[in-house]
Length: 383
Image 1 (cartoon, rainbow, N blue to C red):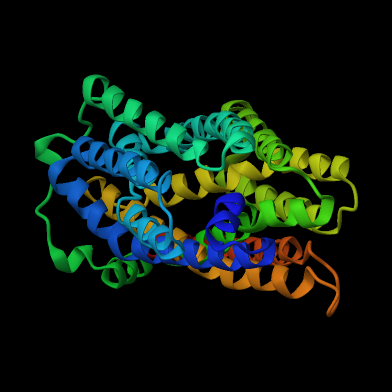
Image 2: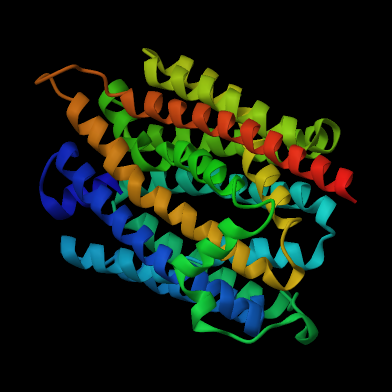
């Protein structure tokens, strides 16, 4: 993305980062508006058609990105992609359909492992192709997405039977209405801010890492791609092995606390790192922080009705979208202010800010857990 944006704008890295931030905000805003609608549609018509349409739209978006010639055309395409960015929430709802509540955390982690495997291959391929031509990675992305559509059409079966579907109601598909209902759902409301802050902290990686690595370590496009691929390796190992082993043994509560604490340490380390090897060491430490998302999703998924899993995942995707909207304002803003010699030179400052969000999320989760435990004990005493 940085290379394409510099090519389209004819500017430098700082200018590209501003356009990249705007594109991310537009993408996230569209996702925020449409994610609950897509979630409600999947509760009505099933997961399979929604998933296939989303993947097809992504393939078209990538293909046009490969030939776009203007910055505003690029922004419009990011908006289009945001409307159909429902693949992950739909797949999470799919897993909720076919998995007992107590096993969903490890199944969500398996999805995370698949995502990590994509992060191993995608950035490495993108980095190599980007060194040849900045538009080649987008052609490759379109081809892979189209292959995924074909695979989904012939292999993936529907997970939501007719008996568990519910009518589509536009009122329920409203983003704010969905979030209000989730905040009022017993046992869920206090966990939503935790999920949001945890997500906000992790979004520092896709938002600003490429820019920080180029500015701080003078890494090439290919080397930035390799570093992201290494993060993918760590995510794959964590989701496929660490989460599968640790989550059932230490429990949801301890998994979330440990994950958020480790994430805070790793983010701080990346922010203050002065050498590349130390960054890789901190990313390796982040192995244990991967548990936070599947653990929180399992916790909340078990607290809502089976016919509302799509609504829950759509609501969580909306919160992810809010984090995506805010992330460029915070992280790109900090990077822009601290990446030149006009003030304090500290290009790693976005990662330190993200570490603070992770710590706040950990404290909020501990308070929420204590509150729910007290509520459960009071209800048991009453009964």
